[in-house]
Image (cartoon, rainbow, N blue to C red):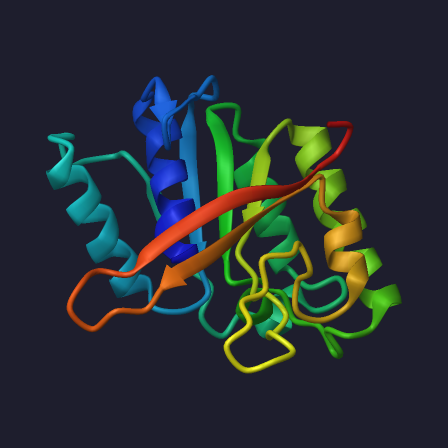
Amino acid sequence: GKTYFVLDLALSVSVGTAEFAGRPLHLRGDAVYLAAEDLDGVAQRAMAWMVSRGVRVGEVLGLASLTGADDEFAARGPGWDVLADFCSLESVKVVVVDTLAAALSMIDENDNAEAARLMRRLNHIAESTKTLILLTHHQAKATQKGQHDRGPDARGASALTAGAHGTISLHVDEYRDDEPNIVSWRVTKIKGG
């Protein structure tokens, strides 16, 4: 769900669609998808998205692999410069990092001080380049069997959610063997909103 949701949004921005998920979409420009895992799967999903919408396959989305990038994004590794370089390109309006845990090396994702530094760095890059940086991350596990977590809490340190300008929560509403799963989403945090 997470990967397809942000891929759908990034491709919608890239091709300049007027709506996303039934809501007006005003952001238009190039999109870059930094996949820390399963780049081939992301590429296949992007291709299926384009074919299903009749979009000409071509330079719609920049895809790059971050597999094995842990050391590059540690503290002050070169991965941060790569991310900032993508964001500083004038035509790029959206950069997706999928997933936070796989791409951005954190010694302890439960460490609030470390998570706060990470979020400050990402916010600085986003604000200074006027680029939307989308991170995919896992939600905290439900506390009871059968209970679904619909809250904004990300797995790990609370500073991840606190430092984000906005969060969107995805939820599988039902599991059925004979029908497709229903995935819903909602905005769970928006800074200044």
